[in-house]
Image (cartoon, rainbow, N blue to C red; front, side):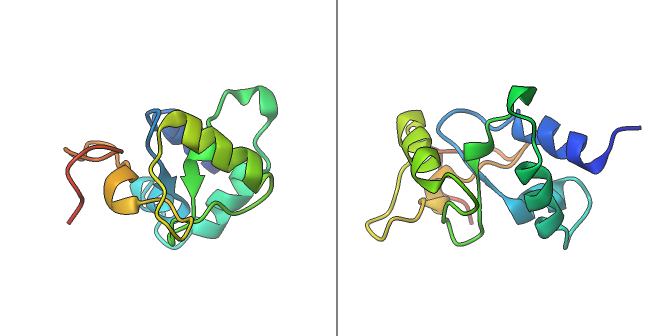
Length: 111
């Protein structure tokens, strides 16, 4: 059986370039609602050689949080993620959820 962290990493690896997912959304998709903080801990402990696009995980307000925020913002911009004028990610355009038609940057806005 895989650990919670391994399940988090497997899901984050699925986030397509140009899209983001929130800590809370990861927890809900994994069937662990209310464990957004644990997702954050897992991401903070992620080994660099794990090939996990950690920069694609943001908070529910659309902000890049945690460490290395400048680098992560640059990575998101290079991925094609759209930012609002206030500096937050445009979640209406860029939030990705697995098996959700029209999710991801450039897709139809979420409801």
